[in-house]
Length: 154
Length: 154
Image 1 (cartoon, rainbow over the protein chains, first blue to last red):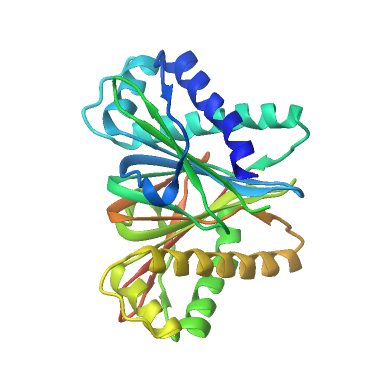
Image 2: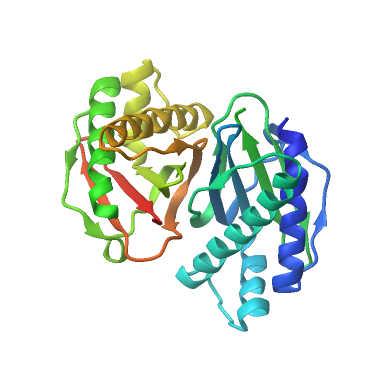
């Protein structure tokens, strides 16, 4: 079931970065999470809940990609990840998840979104606490990679 | 409003660690988040959603405290934070949030919980993406500190 749900989120990541930050991402095939650990410097997590569904989405960004998003979206040059960059990523997470929510709603799946939480720090790793295997989707760009993981428990 | 909601979560952190891991935490007064950045090695985030409420809870644990929890709860000695430790923290997060959910339900506030996401990595920092100021509550124990942040958007 998780695999079915990932595509609307993957489409939302690509369309949001293209539209808002003029960054074209190339989506790679899904990989088993066990074989593919993303160590990022900036991640964002958002919870999703409905009577039907319960899950979380996490996106991890390479540092140069997140700084390029700041430059392209806001015209701001930042050399390091700071509170402003974290804030932008939190807002992007709302937009990405909202876009996937709209797409899934058309398929009859409804959920509400929690508030995003952004994590900064070199080489951190995200672990989803759900039953069963999970997959990770990598997006490649000239500025760096992004990694998407979407897990639903039911 | 956020301040009102924090106490049931703080009580749940203390009672869960006391009951399940025999670790007594001493709660410190709430501090403005701006003045108090917790840099942890292990954090857990869980989203909370209802028609009334939308928020997230994050708990950051010092490494020695998380390893002591493994020892006391499961009798397992781990020298480093690994997938087993992350899994235990994900489960503890479910229990803590579920306990606070039950307490808030008695006060007329209902919400559903998303799935927990656990973050590992030295010196990472958690940023809640919500409107308005947020506070952080520190818990001290002989094994290390825990840091709780609960934010609701409405």
